[in-house]
Length: 288
Image (spheres, rainbow, N blue to C red):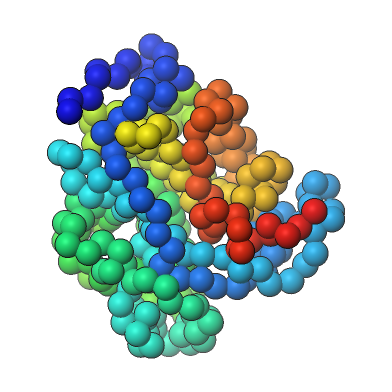
């Protein structure tokens, strides 16, 4: 059934984003992990004063967005089949010890199934967001935010070998160009990925220099994927930015505020944070 024409985001961005779009969305857990709370939540924020320190469970999600004309797009990549089956996937050297406690649920190939992937939107290039890429053909487009590849190039040699293994051989990796960006509501820089206003990358720097969030106009309404601009449901609900895993805390806080302004304007906006799917059994759901 043809979709009604959406108003221009420049005319009325709230009405524009509320207009149902053509995308079908499904959320999947590719793996689970446990990591220190201090990395996920800024424990120096007064709102976090009651949180108990220690490891908390998280998920490595994959979001599947299917467009009748634009194909299937993924938000982040989970883990690959080899890693899920006890191998090392694209992980090299001592980094294998870091990923050894990941518990597989469903590798990317299983999540994708028979669908042809048109592209992957990586919210950023940290290890836990790229591990599933070896399950995809080397020519599948992988899109990241501006400056993200430059940030990866400056990382230490230990992690560099793994990132070169996962990303280095891919033939269609690109970063978004700031000169192509336009404002979308409270977000100063956004990119219309498919050209029809249904799928947007939102500049959300701070966690990494090129971090992005993703906004999708689905058949059931607008959906926001924050990436690691906010790791946890608790952090989102309390407006508390991530902790020690984040490169620039002040910039991350500003990006988080911009994303939360979207939901303040559109209360029905469904939000998926970086490492939880429903807030139950993961993250800080048992915290006060």
